[in-house]
Image (cartoon, rainbow over all chains, first blue to last red; front, top):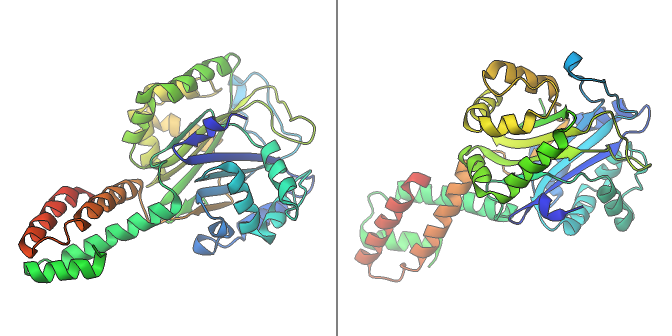
Length: 183
Length: 182
């Protein structure tokens, strides 16, 4: 695995394809579909995650007669992708610890998954089912999740301040600025 | 639909690669990694947060990986806005690159006209079962703008100790500088 191919700035791409155990696809799908969305998502507890998803790949798609031979997967795959703050080793531990019981509820449906109790075994499983990116693009790969959130909050604060300070005299403006932004 | 989280949309597409395709893709992605213009072109599509392509030669398992009749191309993207607009922009702004990349996959109709291209993407797209964004309310443009506002504000903080009139002038200059980012 060439990790530099999974990197853009400090941002990293993780792509994991794990084989789903026979007969477990619908239970896995149900578990994923019933995870809480938004801020209550278990992925919200995984520090450094910008965007992530789980996708059940039941089988590959056939393109019709233009494709020479059809393909079928022996086992469906669970795809997990994440766009996160590197390095990978640290993130895999964040993933294990942050997801807690959900990691086992999800990947427990996958063949060979060792469980999340053993950090080394969990990380080794993710790495051995990882696919290397050929090209990874990040619009703001230099900025960590916390930095993105902080600057978005600052921008909102600046907008609010610009509105409420419109009619302030210089002295009042300066005092209000210092109170709001320090300096 | 789990492909949408706030203003963010997920796309996951997996397509079978033709014979000879891996060599072409190797070159195209090498160029993408090493020739600045490729990524700059993607930056122009200012609504993409993160995107990746990956060639799947073997689907990982416990026995060295499952090899199918063809390798597969995975495309994963996170963007703000509507699916339709995203595909429209992709097919118009980076048509040449789209052709170079997906031209190696079976069934690819070309990026233009856009309707067959959309049908192709829909046919090969997988819907996420769970999708998460750390900042679902923010667009890519807002994030990049916010970084500029923050940097300019930091400079302005340095002027907070000036006289009130000089500070006001610095503040007006700051607002002028960042007005496009607010």
